[in-house]
Image (cartoon, rainbow, N blue to C red):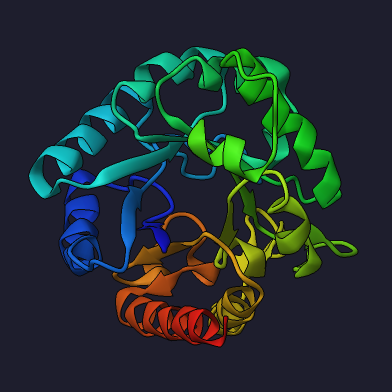
Length: 268
């Protein structure tokens, strides 16, 4: 099982290292293919005054030190095409934000790196539309065919993070996990799926109580991995605190999903 976890944004090197230390157990678990994630820039915050992160250069330096110290594979997201190349030198997975999942220049730039490209499904898109984003990456890499096995072999993932439901809310249509898995490996982003965009005025809200329920549901449907943003104290997080899990809760949820996957394998 792929597991992506870490704090939403790089608030400080101290915080990142503290969280990373607590995540070592997952990297040492033979059942898990672990990746550490944190963002050097949260460019799509609700308010212009919201915390964004340390920026490209300093952020990549911190992530490189995490990689060197703990041996973790790294995931981080990009918002501009010029960021792809330097990020690809550090990150094993370049992540495309949901709002930007159709941006051709961004996808092409990410595809030109050696990294896996994890494309988050736009909250506004049908699952079937994500096939075209996958093909943009594959064709940039010189691959003319498509399908799950082709995408997996050539480093393209899709990520489900909920769909817009009215104003300020998201829902997860579990059918999307099945549909998108026809043409790429699928990661379920359990923490962003409980986000409530702009619900707190100048920032987004969320309800982390529902993360374990959605994660267990996704595991029962069948996915390739999970993405959880986690923090030592989500109440004090500078970005996405209401939908993040604290580190103790993360361990419980991961164990639950692993058990569900084991049951499904036995049932086959």
